[in-house]
Image (cartoon, rainbow, N blue to C red; front, side, top):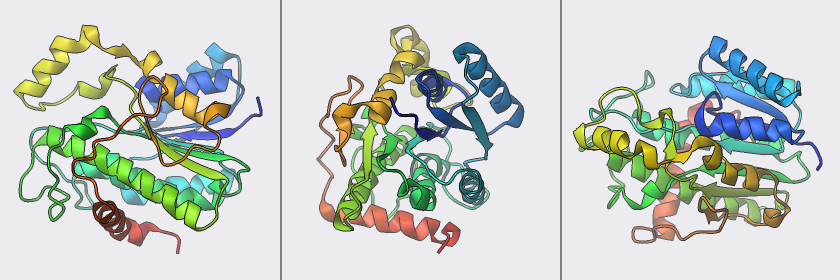
Length: 290
């Protein structure tokens, strides 16, 4: 298999870490993103030791800052002239109380939607240099559980329920995946594919941490013994990053069994998809190199 340069966000634990380890084992050069320098360096050393390969690098950025995302993208472009696979893996569900970043953006939409949107836009110039590039957005089956979106209140300033906002952020991520695929095809850019996936309901640190509300906390604690391991959860990301079966497949949503799956269509329309795309572009515009 031809060696690829691969960047994975949120790769110091869970699905991201297992994805990185497997791809390094296959002989690819993997750049992992982490938030904490010491932890990220330790993960790099662990992957290198377990795989017997030194083809692992890292970048540090706090993804709750779009300025940091831009700095990370600039650092990547200084170090590497080409990117073959971008895996937008980082994501989370947050507390029952609405929180904002220092830039004034709601945290869930920032991490799960604005960050992959911005990072992809910033890295397009190096992605286009790959002979066969793949962009992979880690979504979730929870995109079907967010209920009816209020597209006049995308950042939930009027009404906030944490799991609803999480579900909607993953729905919008699928919509921008589809829209980017359409834009690339319209421009005649045939060397880049972009797909989304559901990794399975994963036993990782995803549901841990501060209070997310009694019901969500209870469900996570009750169901942990039934959840898929992070190693199994990484399988579809690895498949989309490397399999020849999906070389020319784009704009699709894959289930955790590496099959194209149905998305929630109840609230979908071309108009709504374009509205979310334009909204994201408006949010990230100050951080683009244009």
